[in-house]
Image (cartoon, rainbow, N blue to C red):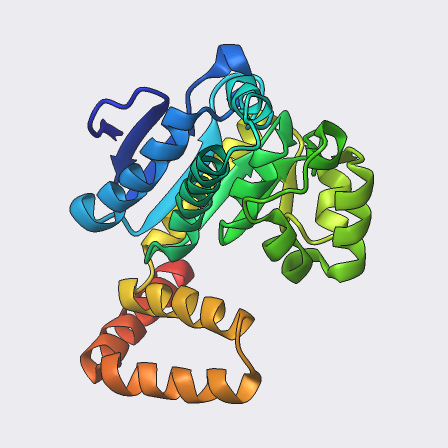
Length: 270
């Protein structure tokens, strides 16, 4: 894997169309500080538009995926006064962090989250903005914000209900209870679980390479149309995908992909 530019809080590499973004504050449990919020969208854009990867894999280094928001940000919140300028400054900070997470959703390529250890608070914000979520069976998840006196404001309350359903999302967000990777799969928060961290990262990389090997524009189009469908009516989404394919679908693209699949089937029989 080839490293990209040097980043303060992330280890970023790419190889054969797969970009890997690894949270790199293992001594802090990969708690997300303000610098990480600022760096993330730049990294995502760099991999998506400049490097031209076809898939992004998001993971954490060390014992945990992400233990939540850094205490320094909480101290900043606690130091706020009732002055208007402080309120506006806080709002700007929240909007910046929201946009940082949304960069995962808005980028043109699929993002796979591989979760091990703890995935608390901001970790849930991150993974719910990803397209596919995998975890170890022993991973621990928690929508933690209620227990620190906050309503989650970076995307979990907006995205989680559309992944696990409204009732389950209310249970998880209001109780802040911890739940395992096994339960996360039962709730459809993750689609696959693995017995060990090694199996998780190997499985995540294999999945990423599988997606990278598919037709680039078919994969990008599928992500884009699914995201549109999530937030719009069936009728509107059907019309949207018809327009999308009318504008972008090329017969050469379909023929090339069909030939590729036929070749794979022939090789499998040999």
